[in-house]
Image (cartoon, rainbow, N blue to C red; front, top):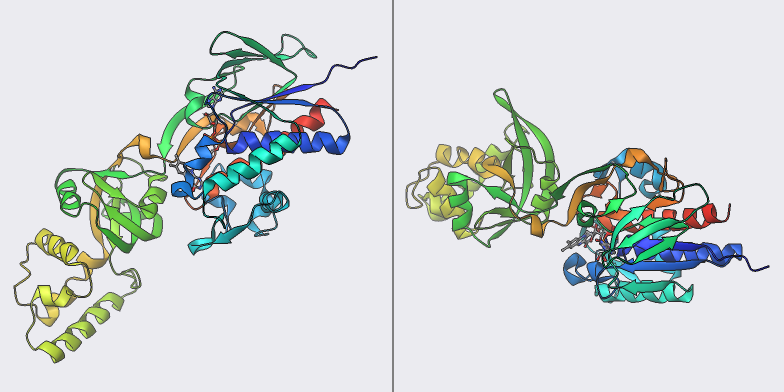
Length: 421
Ligand SMILES: Cc1cc2nc3c(=O)[nH]c(=O)nc-3n(C[C@H](O)[C@H](O)[C@H](O)COP(=O)(O)OP(=O)(O)OC[C@H]3O[C@@H](n4cnc5c(N)ncnc54)[C@H](O)[C@@H]3O)c2cc1C
């Protein structure tokens, strides 16, 4: 007797969808069961979203991933709890290494393909998918997923062109943005918020950043929240910050943007090796510097004092902001009084400057409705989700792709097991 072959539909051929399809196919092969796996992709090719990552180089993971750096970290922790303890020995690294990807590390544990091209990652994924018979159905946009009318019946996928497709199990892996328009079998979808993007400054502060447009500084940047007469530190980052016409950009600003709330300010420390909260530390550095410079040059100006410490345009803008001319004489006390300006420089921010530049969307499918061990919808057997479609996002540095691969691997394997249970 011919038994009907189960069909698994994966909605979205990005990072999560491709890994889910491969994991499902490999699990079916392990179990020795046939499985028809189709990736429905609205674009004309799969993997395009991966090509844009890491400036075309694909920062695909990170050696030091910590699950508390994710939004909904308890869910992430339960799903991929080992990631904090076992760098390079978790499911993602084993997967890529066994499928032929060779990689190298840069600063802060960021991992990139050795070939330094995102296309290499896509090649590895597509070849691995083809090896287990995954079918790519491109230019096929899924408009709605409808739950089976009764147990044992298939899901219906309503395509944007009106065609109906059936599937015994479905993995939703359409990414963050698309969750705004996909109707996913009545599951709770939280509003989408762009994250990991540049921040807009307002008023005088925007004038300041405009004057420094395109200038990069290495600094410590803190997102601070006024509380009475004081500020609470919401997030602290160290790295490169770029001034832009509209405000602030750069990786450390992107990371701060994940925590932004109206009313927050960004505090910049232009002397990142000195801690303004260590009493006297910055002042000692400034007075020693003043002593050294006056020993060499005799009487000095503010311009002389800052020369060699900051980029000239940054010093000029900072001095202008504090109402001092660069050619004014700078005594020892004046130099020490620059401590606040140099290490606790505040800028008001209004929020995300340009949603299109944001790397991820917070929101999407509410994780409360999913089992982190399997990525299956608690109330809808046979429906799974992975990647950014779920309300999970992480910091810059490979965290978001790491989540996409991890959750894809879990969902794909679990879907095959469920279909064969
Ligand atoms: C410019 C940029 C750079 C980034 N760089 C990095 C980086 O270096 N490292 C990192 O970790 N993260 C990075 N990210 C974030 C990362 O790319 C995402 O978190 C990750 O790609 C999410 O994977 P996903 O598979 O869930 O969704 P996506 O990659 O968005 O894939 C979803 C796929 O589904 C398809 N799709 C959508 N809707 C439908 C539909 N209705 N029917 C059929 N198909 C559909 C889409 O066309 C797409 O192919 C970057 C993001 C951006 C925008």
